[in-house]
Each structure stands twice: as structure tokens, then as C-alpha cells.
Length: 306
Length: 306
Image (cartoon, rainbow over all chains, first blue to last red; front, side):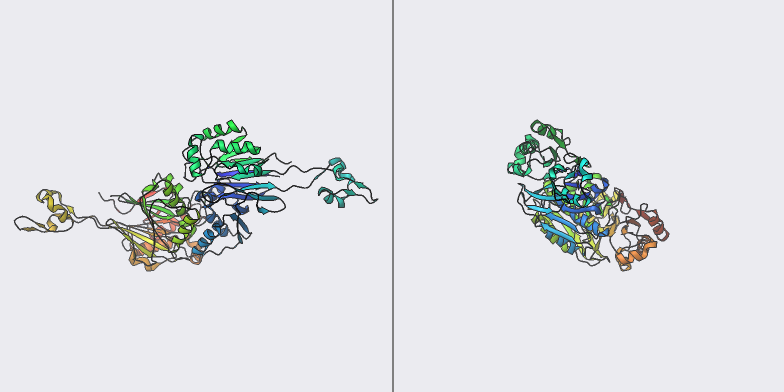
């Protein structure tokens, strides 16, 4: 079961050659979710050979242009491509007006249902949930209200032990997978623990951009497999980071270490860094399991489920 | 004195590999004007090595996303780059709300004056004028109100004849250039016509996108040096052109021929045409002086002034 993230843009607010504004594509069990949608995201999706019609939901962290300006064009292209399936959009409460004003101005009546749902700026609040995935908010610290997202697989069914499968009647297998004991026709009971192994632990991915250092997130990030955290600046510009409410690479790594995440992925690099190895270096000093995001790169979240 | 147009995007509404949405950069006497600003225009400006801080004014034809969705990002980048000079934006009346809603949502207080001026949907109405250039509207026919733009040089000063320059006192030269006769200290008068040659004829560029065939534009386009006209479809799709209120290449050429323009430049190609030579072919049958616009290409408007 796939759980992976493809980076579409690693840039900060100002355009920089070869870097694009924030956008990431999550593939969870072959379902596609887009996180942030900076200008040109459609183009980046095409470069990554993603069929954008497959995107189910879009999650927007905040109303700075480098995180949402590509959304209107995406909504419009999906319309022109004949989409009929609903599109869920989760984001700041201002997003609805921004979209509706533009649909009105362009005289567009979408052929598919667009569900725009405001996100609460509260860590742990549920943004979306179904039987495969749960998305909760992460209250980030930025100049405008900015909410990160924690994506977590819902626990799957227990696995029937190979050597016991034959002993479980077909009609009872679903119940046993769901954790029930096996009751045989003669009334005897076989405890579930003798028949099944636990499902693989649910994997999780956290997206934290844009934010000042926010240690209060630690309990919410505890045990996350992969944490994306912005690293706009190097330590030499810590004052600038503070002023603009962004993070240094070391701050991102400190949060990753304190929350005990599996891996840390850095992004949202200031255009002043032609080469971001200084950011990687400063982060790995604190938290060795650090990766750099790059346009078009795909990382697995956690250990693959077989 | 330069007068040239650089094409930044030749695509229609749906993204197509290698084509970008509508945007053109006009250089008139080293002053830069942007016409339409589809998503990704900043990136295209960078590819064309244009310093976007030099753009004085932006002209938006209509509120379809492929013509304006890059504007908000441009406005925001100019702010981040520290612009202090005013930026003029001329476009449909809905544009102001679209921009203001987004500035508010992002908590942005621009450091430079942004003058958003609604454009009248009337052919011949003045959109902007100073002592170098005049911009008037062209009432196009589209599904939403869409206004093209006619850019015309203001007549320059008359040229002093080389062999007469020495005979004109310094204090009188400016007046003679402006068309006045020369009055000498002894009261004698030398007619202007003996001292000067007329200035080069003012050059003009017309931008017509998006529009159904609109023959009522002929008197307004008469004698234009370079006419850009959309050519979304080939003649085989004339019905589709009519339905969507776009033009075929032949219709563009017919307008060019009937208005007696110098050259015709085609663009806004439907994504279905991987190769647009069919459009060029159909247009040149009617009007031989037809060019294809291409991302990054620059064309002179009229004959160069020396």
C-alpha cells in the first residue's frame, strides 16, 4: 500500500531559478491529495506525469500567494477537462471568498461539485477523515493564520496467520480480521490473538510550512514517520527568520529530534540559497535523518507495507 | 527608438506542453508594458531575462484565468522585491475586487502605489495616454466582457534638417521641432517646412484576444503596423470557434486584410494543435504577411525608427 510524497515546489515567496512555490502531492493507497498549490502547480504536475484529474482533495495551509495562487487555475482546468467528481478544498476561511469572487468574475459555472471547507487553526482538530486516512490540523506560527496538516493512515484490518487461515470458516474471516474471536459451530471459542497478527502500524506524514519555531507541536508530531518542515534560512539569518516568522534548518531539526520523528524533510528555501547544502548540514548536526526536498523527488513515508 | 513585442505565452485555456497562457511584453521606447498575465508569467519573464521591476503598466483583457491568474503573484513579487514606483493596472472592473480580496486575505500592505483602473468596453476609448504612447480599447466579442488594446506612439517632434541646423539659433530649436516657424531677430520668418522634415509616422500595435470574428473592428485597426489576433482554431473547427466565441486563423487573416494592417501575428492556440502550421497556412491564404507567435520570440512593430 503506497504512502509517498512528491515535492512539486521547494521555493519560498520569491521566484528563484529552478525552484517553484510550495506544492506537494501525497499518494496514500493510490488516492491523491495535494498540499498547497503555488503558482504553476499544474505545470509541475505535468512534469511529474501526474493526471491531475485524480486529485481528490486539496489542503491549503495559508493565504500567502506562494501557497495558493495555483489553485484557481487548477480548479478551472479540472472544469475544462470535464471533471464530474467532487473536489474537496480545505483551507483558511478566506479561501472561499477568493475562489468565489473569481468564479463569478470569469462567469464560470463549474461542472463538478467544489466543496470548500474552512480549516480550524487548532492542533489535533480533524480536517478530514474516512476509513483510510485521517487528516488533522497543526497550528503553526506565521504572520497570517497558517495551519499544517498531519496525514495518518487509519489502522487496517488484522492479518490472518497463514497457518491458521484454513481453520477459519470463510463466513468468519471478516470478523476475525476486524479483531473478533472465532466462535466455532460447536460453541468453542478461539481467541483472536491465536489467529491473527496486528496490522502494520499506521504511517503518518506531517506538513509544517510556513512557521516560526513552534515547540508546542511536539506532542502532536510524536512518532510521525516523515515530517516536512520549512527551513527558509540558515542559522546565520536566525534574526531574519524570527522577524518573518520562518524557521532555520536547525530549528526544524530540533523539532524533529524532540518529537522523535522518523525522518525530516526540509523545504521552502529562501531564494538567496543557490546551494542548500548549508541547510542540510546545519540540520543533520541536530537530527541526522534529514532529507532535502527537491522538485520532482518522491519519498516513501515510513516503511513500506507489503 | 524601440517598439517591439515579446510573446510570453501562446496557449489557450488548457495547459499544453511547451505553451504557456497569454502574456506579452511591449517595449515602447524602453518603457515596458505587460499585456495579459496568465499563470506563470513571472517565470516566463525570467526566461526572457526581463527585469520585472521595469514593468510600468499591466493591461488585462478579460477575467478568464489564462489571461490574468499570474497578476496576483507578480504584484506580490514586486512588493517583496522592494518596488516603490507606482504600478498601473488596467482591466475589467471585476479586477479590483479580485486583487483587493487577495491582498486582504494575505495581510499584504503594498509598499508601492497600485493604481487599478477599470477599462471601458468601447472601441476607441482612451485607456492610457502620455506624451509617448496612447492606448485605446478594442471592444472584442467574447463570453465575458473582453477588451483588446491598441498601442500607438504619440507623434514625435519634427526633425531639423541637417543642412539647416546651424542656421537655427539654439533658443529656437525646440520651438521649430514642435512645428513652429523660425522668427529671426530682424523679424524675418522662415517657414517650418524649410527647416524640418516630418517625424517618422507613429507605429501601432493592436492586441485582440479573445474574440469571435469582429469585423466592426476594421475602422479601429486601419493601418495598424502589427496586429496580434487570436487564432484558437483551424477552419475545420469553425463551429467550435463560434460556440466558444473564439476565432479561426482565417477569420483573423480576414480582419487583417480588411483593415490593411502591416503584419498579422497569430496566437492563443488550442492545445489540440501540437503543430500550428495548419493555422499559419490557412491564414496566409488570405493574408500573406502572417507570423506565428512563439514563447520567447520578439517582433519589431512597424519599421524601425533610426
